[in-house]
Image (cartoon, rainbow, N blue to C red; front, side, top):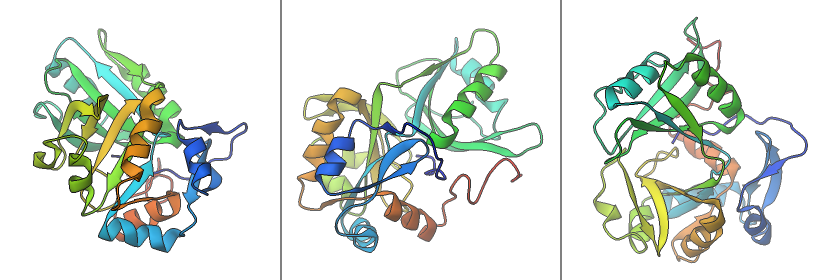
Length: 260
C-alpha cells in the first residue's frame, strides 16, 4: 500500500470505523491528516515495532483513500493512468499491483499510490492514495481523465493491514489459501463470512496483507485478528519507524511536489 502521510491539522477531526476500538485498547489518539488516529497503544512504539518484526502487527489504515478508475477497456484505463504517472499499467496482468507516482507538469510528485488490476473485472484499476492528499489526488485525476473514463471514490470502506513474519499464518486461518498468494497480488474473498478485497502487500518492509472491507464490518474483522496470539495492534508511531527502517518513502517528508 502507499506510504503513510505527514500530519495535517484540521477541525473537526474525522474518525475511522475503528476509533472506538482503539480507545478501548488504550490508544493515544492524535490528529493526523485530518483524522483522530492511534499513534501508539499502552505497550509503546518500540514494543509495537519489534512485535511487527517478530510476529504480526495490526494496523488501521482506513484514513487512506480508496478509489476506482474505470474505462471501456483495460487499454483505455491504463492509458488514462499512464498519462499521469511513469508506471506501466498497460502491461499489468489481472490480479497484480503496481506502485507508482502521480506527477505534476514539472515532474514533481503529487502523491505516491498503489494501483491494482482486479482479476475478472475489465477496464478497472483500483487505487489507494494517501489520506492527506486524497482530495488533491481525486481532483488532479478527474481534471485529466479522457472522455469515457470515470473515478469512483469509496468513502464507505475501511482498510486494515496485518504485517510481519507471522501474518500469512494468522490471515490464512480466516482466509484459506491466502498464504499461497505472491507478493503484490490481489484477490477477492471472504474473511469468516465477511466480503473483502485483499492484497499481499504493505508498507513496513514485512510480509503481510492489506484488507479492504465495508466500514460496517471493519470492527468484526479487526477484533477477529486482534484475538490471534501472534497479533499486536500497532499505531502510527511504529508504522513510521518500520517504513523508515525499510527505506520506504513517506509523502510530505521524503517526497513532495518539489521532488522530481
